[in-house]
Image 1 (cartoon, one colour):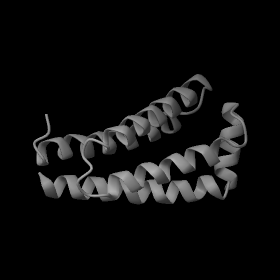
Image 2 (cartoon, one colour; image 1 turned 45 degrees about the vertical axis):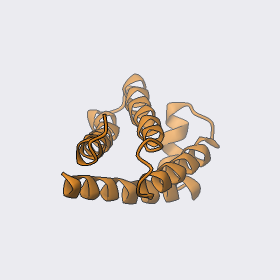
Image 3 (cartoon, helix red, strand yellow; image 1 turned 90 degrees about the vertical axis):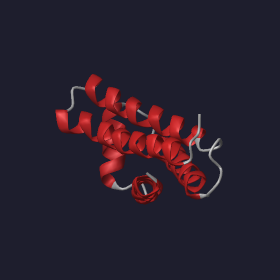
Length: 119
């Protein structure tokens, strides 16, 4: 189970670092999506900062109780993104994209709990 945890955790961390870069640089795809959803232009900077902080906490070994916070924060982010896209009438691909990230996050979370026998 530790191998599953390490693979899912590091895959998730890499994805968060990459997407935080797109948030910080305000790439056109991110800026267009934010405007389309009706959110303010500075939101990607806040989300990108949260992603980096969360990724750092998930990367640090031994901070299992502290890891609960980024897991919860990322869950709110992905579920909120999926709901935002659904309410905006976006395609099913845009609605399910964040939910795939949520599934990867939950796989990491469950594997972490089982690998380190946390109750």
